[in-house]
Length: 201
Length: 422
Image: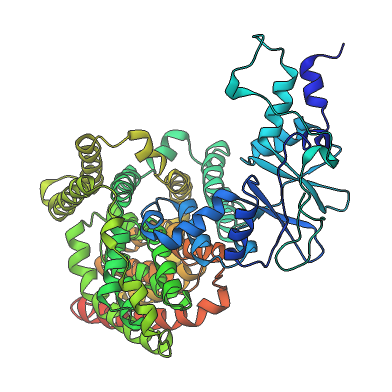
C-alpha cells in the first residue's frame, strides 16, 4: 500500500522544483567574484550557485555563504584572521584570501537529475550541507535549481491540516498554473552573454 | 632478531613512503612486534616514553588555548606593520616570529597560525607568498632546534639522555643564533632580492587594526602567565627533580582550571595522531633494542670509525642531517637514540647527543618532506593555490641546510671535540 511517506519520497525532482518561483542562473567558472556577487543580488532566492565550464557542464557549486565570506573578508579581515584555530580553518582562510574567480571558491559539484526523487535530493543536500542543489540533465548540463524550501513544501502539502484554517501568516503558496513550469522564472543569460536558459519570466 | 628487524624496516619504509598514514603504520608495527612474539606487551609498553607523550600533550593544550586568543595573528600583523610593509623586513619579522614561537611551542601549531597571516599580508601587498612561506619553513626548523621543546627530536633526545631544558639552551642556542642570522642573509639573497611593493599597497596593510585580532584579552593574559611559568619551570625542572612532562601537564591543567576553558574544545585540538605515532614508534624501537639489533649496529659503527670520537660525532651530525631531510626525523631519531646510548658506553656521549640533535633538527630543512611542519605548510599552500613543489623548495633547503651544517660542524668541533681526548 502506498503510504504518505513513500509518496513524499517518490516525488520527482522535476515536480518539486516547480513549487516556488525561484530564479536561477549558472555561474561561469572564470567569472570574477565581484560579478558573481552582482549575479547573486539579481537572484536573491538562489542559495547555492551552480558553477559551469565553457561547455555549460556543472563543475562545482558555491553556497552563497562561501561567497559572503569572501566579500566580508575584504571588509573585516580581522574577524576571519582571528578565527584560525586548526588546519581546516587555516586552509579555508587561505582559499578565501587567494580567491579571484568563481572556480577558486567552488566546492565539488553536487547535483540531482530531474527524474530522481526528492529523497535522493534531500540525502545529497544533507550530506553536503547544502540548502539547494542544481538540477542537471543526462549531459550534466544545469536545467534547474531545487531549494530546500521546496522539499519542505512537498512535505507540508502531504500533511493533513490540524486546523480548519491555517494561520494568516502561514499560507502555503500554490503553484501558478498560468505560467510555464509553475510560475518559475526562466534563468537569464549570465553577464558575459552566454547562458543556458531563456529570458527572465 | 631478524624478525624484529624485518618488521621495523617494513614499517619504516611504510612511514617514509607516505602511502599510508604514518600513525597507522607505527601502531600496526608496534602491535605486530608483540603479536610476532619479538617482545611481549609489558616490554613494549615499557618502551613508551611517557615523558615525551605527555610533554607534547601538555604543550599542545597550552598552544591551542593561546592560539584561540588570536595572539599569533596579532604578532604577525603587528610585526608586518612595524616593518612598514617592506618585503625583506616583513620576511624577517614573520620568520623571526615563526622561529621564536617554534622554540617554545610546537612547530605544527605555529605554522598553522602563521600561514594564513602570511597569505593575507602577501595578498594585500600583491606579492607572491612563496618566498615568505619558504622562509617560514626554514625558520621554524632552525628556531625549534634551540630548545628542548622546540622540535620532537630534541624531546626524544632530552628524555632519553637526561638532558634538561637548560642544557639544551646552553648547548644549542649559541649555535642556533648564528645559523639563523646566516639564514636571514641567504633569504635576502635568494628569496626577496627583487621584490618591490607599491606605496599604495603598503598603506592598505598599515590600515589594518591588529587589535581586533585579539578575541579574548583575559584568556590571553592567563595564557601568557601560565606559559611564562611553564618556561620558568623548564629552566629549573632538572634542579627540582621533575621531568619536563610534569611541568607541561601542570601548566595545561592550571590554565584549563583558571580560564575555565572548555575541556573538550581544548582536547579536540590535541594532535592525537602525532601522539599515537610516537606510541607505536616507541614500541617498535623497543623491539629492535631488546633483540640486540641496535647493539650490533653500534658495534658496526664503532668498527667503521675505529672508535674515533671526532669522526663518530661528525659522521653522526652529517648522517643525521641527510637522513632527516629524506625521511621523517622522528623515527630516525628514535632509532638512533639507543645506538648513541650504546656508543656512549665506549666514548664520551655528550658530543654525540648534540650532534644527533643538531643534525636531526636542522636536517629537516633539506627537503619539503623533511619535517612535519614543512609538509603542513606545503599542504596549506597547495590548498590556497600556491603549491610548493619538491624541486622548487630543494635548492633553498639544500643551501640553508649546508650552511647550517658547516656552522654546526665548526661549533661541535670547537666546543666538544677539541677538549675531549680522542
